[in-house]
Image 1: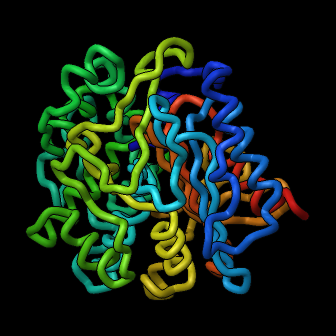
Image 2: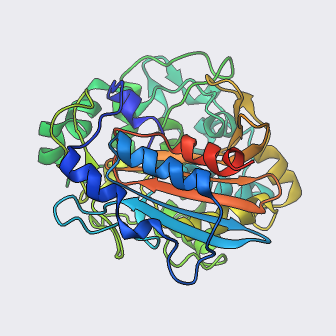
Length: 388
């Protein structure tokens, strides 16, 4: 789901948990690097994840992999607010919109094999699907879906979707619903398009619902099958899966928490279990080690050929300064001048970011088990710029 889930709920500021919860979280022994991990260094990153917990994030897990420095991993805070159990560096978690990079990668592999062209219209592959609210799939290309320049209305901005799946009463009533991608697209297309295709950029999850549907049309199988066969299995991503209708997260894992409100104040709810069909194309589950393996292999050219990787890294301007959006891949120019590539993702109770340097040699994956506080990019800034 969309990186800015909190924005869709109009949450404005981070809030701290009660002092009774925050104090033991900061003192959790998991702040030390676990056995087998490289000790020392990464002081700014440690401080950044502690700061996230102080801002209200229940718990953080982060793993860094450097080609020469090996792997370093640590946690802060708790994985279960009820028991106080700390987070694990091996936690599985829902990665939300970081799934977009997997989907774009599959489509680029299919493009390399001659199965489609990035300039094909959506109408060619999904005839009659993109109609409504002045949307017209005959004027939208696959490339525009992937780089978010299609103008297709964002499902997460739809008021009915928000009431049904993002706010408390609707979520607890409907979290085990089974939804088809066609139903989700129809809900989005009941609204007017955001702009004429190709004229500007705007984040819209509906683009990637459609992109996953294109994969299914070409392959004749669920898009998750292609992700598994083309990415998960070749890279031996043993903690990564497309859950389909599974409502739980594999262990080890932490509980996931959200406010389920249009404010960051108020009660905190356990939102760990839900059927992810309403998050179609954003439901992938992974862990930090697997995300580092995937994003570093991708940027090193081990997953796509040179032409496809160049297409993926060809960015358009976004609404944020010093950020570009390619084909399911973001570029972030950090304050110290370093550019990293990757993607973030927010979904109920989980906020994730996975990035790497241009050569794939220095990778980081971080996850918060709360969706209303903290900022994963602050952890990225700390890792790449903080200890200089």
